[in-house]
Length: 417
Image (cartoon, helix red, strand yellow):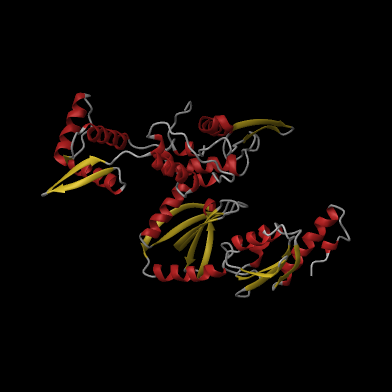
């Protein structure tokens, strides 16, 4: 990278990326949080990470910068480059590569004493001032064993270490897929960087790459869930930049299949209910004490999920549950419409009325969450009903406004029952 500064705090990188990419690039005059010099520094950083994807456009307001990323061409998430600017201590890196070299050269498993001796020899040959004690080396080897990088075998009272077998082509493909679709996929990208060049076999129609910036937040949440801990989170309101904090019990991560947005589902003791938090609005996560009710709270969330279309756990009408149903019509050669309803019904029910009509119905906490999905059937809907009349009126008025926009007043589809 041309701009090689390493940044210790990734949250700083995360804000740069979000400011300049997710919420749209600003021109120099629009950047008011800091000085114009700070703008230039941050722009250069982004150019060093994503220079191949940056484009420029001149408007009456000035020069605007934007990113153009085509997932049909870019098989690997380019935003991972930002993670690779995060710094580590020279001791971590030095010890890592020395251990890897020693184990790679060893013809058979070797003990901790042998490894420590070879590390001393290695460092002295380069007149390196750093010294690693056996305790540090043992902890590092234990970490590598847990990650599957090193194999530890006990013979008598002595532990012997060797490198794990090298990965196969199938392993590379698994890493490829993991790195592009899984939460914290940057781990897979780091592992791929360590190996020989590998040609990926995957291409993605919908490639949700912006979640990359929330990987550190996600990591701490996963750690808290594994240890059944409470966490204290700081969230930001993007409209007014206000930051709030809350103590919650993290229970699940849910990812939208429509836009890739990630949410934390958590129990809030303050409000005594389940709540959702967008990960890109979480500024920081602090681990707290263990919560003995974790398992029962997760069971409660699992039970609630049978009535959750998205992440909302509370209706706008104030009722415990809201009902929605609609009927779609399709021709004899369009049976794929009925199959699509079966495939995408989630917590709903599909009833085939006859060979050309199918009814979908669901009882959910928030019926408004279904609206974007229902709209994809809009030209086929013959009847639609919501238990909340406000949602039904909003939906039908949107249809009428659309018909008016296209001059379709009087259309037979204008009157939804």
